[in-house]
Structure formats: C-alpha cells, structure tokens
Amino acid sequence: MELLLQFFLLIPFLGYLISLAISSKNEFAISRLAFVTLCLQLAFAIVFTVLWLYSGHHSINLKEFSIYQVDDYDFFIDLYFDRVSAVFLLLGAFLTFLITYYSRFYLHREHGFKRFFNTILLFYLGYNIIILSGNFETLFIGWEFLGISSFLLIAFYRDRYLPVKNAVKIFSLYRIGDIGLILAMWLSHHLFHENVTFGKMHNAELVSHLLQKHSWEGFFISFMILIAALVKSAQLPFSSWLPRAMEGPTPSSAIFYGSLSVHIGAFLLLRTHPFWEHQTAVRVLIGILGVLTCIVASLMARVQTSVKSQIAYSSIAQIGLIFLEIVAGFDDLALFHICGNALLRTYQLLVSPSIASYRIKEQLYHYEPREKTIEDSFPKRLEYSFYILSLKEWNLETLIYQLFLAPLKKVSRKFRFIQVNLGVAFFIAVYVLGLVLLLFKSSIPTFLQNYLPGFYAFVGLLMVIKAFTERRKVVMSWFMVMMNHFWIALAISINVHIHYSTLAMYLVGVVLSALVGYWAIRRLVKKEKRITLARFQGHSFEHPMIAFVFLLACLGMAGFPITPTMIGEDLIFSAVREDQYFLAIFLSISLIVDGLALVRIYARLFLGPHVKTYHAIAHKSS
Picture 1 (cartoon, rainbow, N blue to C red):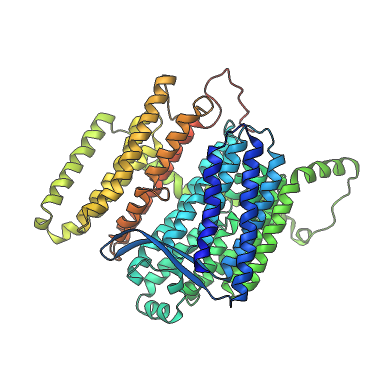
Picture 2 (tube, rainbow, N blue to C red):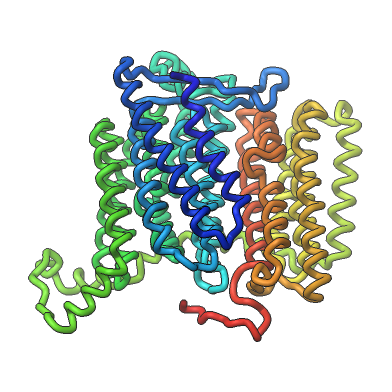
C-alpha cells in the first residue's frame, strides 16, 4: 500500500498540467477535467482508506526520493499516512469535489474561468502534499503551494483595488508563518542531527531523551511551530486577515477560508503533537490563545454587517476551541470537530448570497425586535466598550502592522538619504571586502569570524528592506532583491566551510530567475514607456504573457517549490550552527522580506485597476 500514496499527488498534478494546455475559451473542457480529476481522487481516497483500515490501519512512512544529497545532508521527499492524514484526505477530496462541481455554474462566462480552476488544482495539490508530508521539507513545499494559490485566488478580481491590496496584505502575514516553519526546520536539523521525519518525531522515548538535554531548543521549535499554526488558522493575534481573504469568489472562500486551508494550522499541531505534548509552557500558551481567540472572535462575529465576515469570525472561534481540544489531548474529538466545522462553513458560504438576499427581504417586511441577549446583563459601559472594540476588530490589524510592517518602513526611511549611485558603490565596496576576507579567512581572528556572518546577513537584510519600500525604480528594486541572495551566500561562506556545489545550487536558480524577470521588465518598459512602483497599474490586462513570465521569475527567486533556490535555502540554513540564533533570524527575515518585495513588485506592475483611463476602472470600495 505504501506505493499507492504517491498517486494522491500524481492525480492532481497531472490534472493541473493538462489544464494548462486547454484553451481558456473552452469552459466545458476545463471544468470537466477538474471535475473528473477530483472525482477520481475522491474514489481513490475512499478505496485506499477502506483497504488501509482493513489491513490494520498502521502508520505508513514512505521515503520517495532524494532531491539533493551532500555529506550528511539529505533533502528528500517523504510521505506519511495515519488516521489524521486519512481524515483530512477524505475531507479535502469530498469538499474540493463539491466546490469544483458548484463552480462550473457559478463562474460561467467569468473572465478568469480557466485561471480559477488552474489555481484550485494547484491548491489541492499543495493541500495533499501537506497532509501526506512525512518531514518538514515536504510539508514546506505544500505550505508554499497553499500560500501562492491563496494570493492568486484572493486577487482573482485583479482589476479591482481592494482584492489586490488584501491579497498582498494577507501574503505578508503568511510570510510571518513561513518564518516560524523555516526556523523550526533549521533547529530540528541540529536537534535530531538529520532531516527528521514525523515518524521518528513520534518516537516518545527518543523525543523525551532529546528534550531532557535540549529543553530550550525543544521549546524554540515548538514555539515556531505554534507561530506557523496561529498564522495559518487565523488565531490571535493574526485573526484579522481571514475576513479580508473573502474578497475572492465565493467558492474559493468556501474551500480556502471556510473548510480546508484555515484548518491546516490545527493539522500542523496534530502532526507535531507528540513532540510538544510534554512541554507544559507550550501547552499552556496554546490553550490561552485558543480560549482568547474563541471569546474575541465570537464577539467580533456578532457585530459584523457582512455575511462572509460573520462566517469567517465564527469559524475562527471554532478553531480556537479545536486548538483547546488538541492541547487537552482529545485528538479524536478535534478531528471530528474539524470535519463538522469545515462542512458547516462550506455550506454557509455557498448559500450566503441567497441567504443575504432572503434576510434583507425578511427584515424589510417581517421585522421583529431581537430577544434579550447575555450582553444586556452587563453594565452598559462594559457592554458598549465590548461593542466598540468588536466593531473595530480589537485593533488587531493595527497591532500587526505596528509590530511587523511599520518597523520595516521606519528602517527604510533611515536610509532614504543614500542616493542610488552612492548606495550601489557602498554595497559593492563592502561586498568586495567580504570576498577578500573570505579568501584570507584563516588569518581572521576567531572573535571577528563569529561576528562577520551576522554583519553581512544584516547588511543584506537592509538591502532587501530598501527594495521592499522602493516606490520609483523598478529595475533597482529587482536587482537589490537578487543581490540579497548573494549577501546571504557570502555570510554563510564566511560562517562555515561550504561546498561550491551548494552555493551553485542556491545561486543558479536566483540568477536565472533574475535574468528572466529583468527581460520581462524591459519588455514591459518597451511597450508602456514608463512604469513605477508608486501604485497598482494593472498591466496584466494588456500584457498577460509578460505578467505570467514575470510571476514565474518571482516564484523562482523567492524559492518556490521545487526550484534550485528553495533547495539552496534549506542547504543554507543547515550551515547555520544551533547557537547562532541571531544569524538564523536575520537570514529568515531577509528571505521573508525578499518574498514580500517580489510579490509587491508583481502586484504593483500587473494587478489592480489599469493605469490607462480608457479602460473601465472599479471603485476602490468594490
């Protein structure tokens, strides 16, 4: 049965590849292909699960193949199947099949019909990779698929301002979750001295022995896993992004933010539960956040004027309870709760347009005063305070902005005085100095060797922050993002002896993507004469092929699975020692801002209302 696991990835992957070749005008072929793909997947999932239960329902661990191997490092794809995977597999197959059938009619004659079904198949492939992943590397591949498909579906109505703005904003929060997963991968390599599988992580005796000697490392890994889970499942303090994600079509809202994607955080906690279950501090923290999320999200749901927002916050509150059930050790109850919540929210979102119309008529012609609620028993000042706070969504969006995005902009403003020519000359001079130090590394004092990698990683971080906040020169921003990877490679080369093949694996993907992206920018400049990063310009409307090529270049440079850049990034982190927390944090933040800068460039150039006034422009509020 182990070999059959790979078919759960092969079926949606083949469906996605075939869908790319179908003409966008042939709606019947596009929808029929997606329908048949999901129908096969659902039937295969049911048959496989029945056979697995009949054969004793033991956990299955399958090492597929090694992508890259050097010395004691092995980047390999690993698949794992147990009862948690079985529940999520059946749930995902059924709901995606249902949404695909519904969307055939809902999106009929929509301009982005093919784009929608392509993205749904891409999402479903990433979802299957996550739930069947047997190690962090495989899980991160699916994690990135979910992130980019979520961005594309939120910005589905790409000619409108709000969907594009919210897509960029939500992708920014997703990158915070990526930091948690990257740092958890990094330290788990050093704790287990290998690319650890989830099967080995479930070995209670081994985990207990390691945590007794390395309790701080165990807490750090668990905390980073929690950060990733909180972001993905929209728990406090990251709850404000989920209603903003409802800007996409109703079917994508149902499958992403009502049923499947929003429960991936709970899946991550269930998958790593044997690792953190004996760490009291982590369990208390998850429990407190779950309870607070449940209370706050319930209050916010009660004051929303939009049906989708009400459903979103209600779902967040239920996931808070699911987190509490996982912490309490009720895994089976949590799985049952996940299925119930996913099915209910999918139904509610799919019927929400009809329900909204019905309720409007009901209020107009059959209005009845509301019954007395529990809030009416509170003192009026307290009741009104809760009402105002809930109406303002407890200022969670402002809090996240002040904690994460505002510092980036403040740092960038500090370096605004540096002119382009002066800045380029400075960075080149410092980089050449670093290369000289690398050649004479053996002659450098030990204490200086300990600080140089962090210094060069920090300078690279400053460069990519400057690229992220650049508002005028597109080419300069693009190449500053590329140069950040060279600074990272230099910092790691000074830090430890690293194979040239490893650096080549990392930088080849970066350089190729940078050249392709530069070609796309030059083609756009040739056709449009003047482009800028000061506003959304919507050039994908007139130049869809250039937009597609540039998106591929952005994904390649950002380390999208499975590219040489992504493998190189994992290799780079394996070269950071377990006591170099600041270096690891600098590198991870640098790579996260790198991805944000790339998505921002793509969105500003190709998404949003068209810059030319003779095209129809939607209002910002639409």
